[in-house]
Image 1 (tube, rainbow, N blue to C red):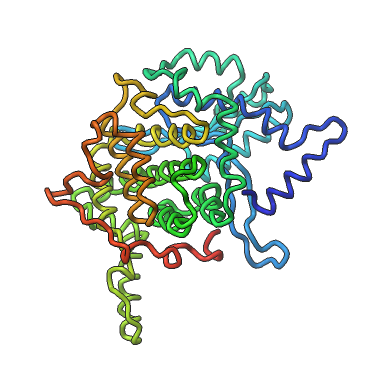
Image 2: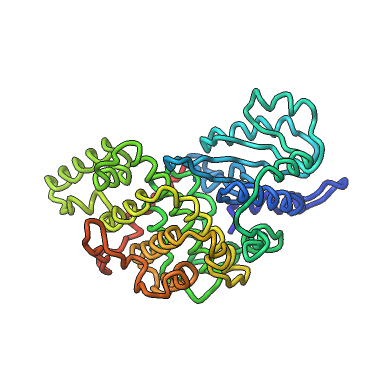
Length: 428
């Protein structure tokens, strides 16, 4: 689904004049270059997201009120340090020859917005000498075709990228996955907008609740038997896994000895925000407004979230593979690739713990958002069935923390999207 601004831009720039290529044609020409960069990042052991769009909800201007798309990023690559810190790399991939120097300054600004560690301007032709001169000063790498071929020779992927994983680097498969969000049931519009736009502009701590809130709102319309809906589900699982990665790094470096308290603080937006919300609950109670002092501050699934965070935080080496498995499944189910994660990555390279943790993430989303249980079954079939022989009965069926079984959410405890989704005025 496209925002009004995006629709208008596409329609206007599709009109060709004086041999000028349309916006759609230009994006199509850039797709092979994006696929090459995705492949390079995968050989580095990273996970990726293509065509990340930045948008905010603008208010205050009578004619301009509504969602406004600012720009988009061609390739976002995410790797992890030994301590679990996300390492972000951006790639701007273009076939156009003009405005290379201007684009470097633009990429520097986008890099700062994402707090990225590295950024590359990738071109399918020779770049001006001025661009290479600015490279070190701006902290933006320059990659032309010769550079890209030389870089590719310096990395070797232990997994076979020509087998089932090839769908991630095949231009037609990438196109089909990118188009998966278009033309879905209108009841999924809010979820689609969140996945495509809002996720990337929210403060990271909000996404631990926002993903669930939007899934909960869309739950009645999401059909686990529909490959396109399943693709959306695995895409949200990827996004939630990334939100978890950010949360676990924050907790690991701030309050590792008290994970339950750290989770509550992180979800609330910090210890000060947690105290302020507690005080608000007290004031509402004094005013005669009945508020559950705990659920009014924290989501009803916070204990299950704490258990999930504890499992992920204790296995920092698995974080990257959790995201890579979700990235593969999000594309595979859309393009008809039926391989399981074990088959796609190979028995010698698949990491059963990472597969199990992603199954835990999917199971948690199903329970917390009130999705149909077949989504959990579909995730298990692709992730752990051929690694465990189907012995487990649920994605969160492992013995819980401190030897106790995790307490499942009951329907009355499921997320209320009306309570968790931010109003339009807060989506800036």
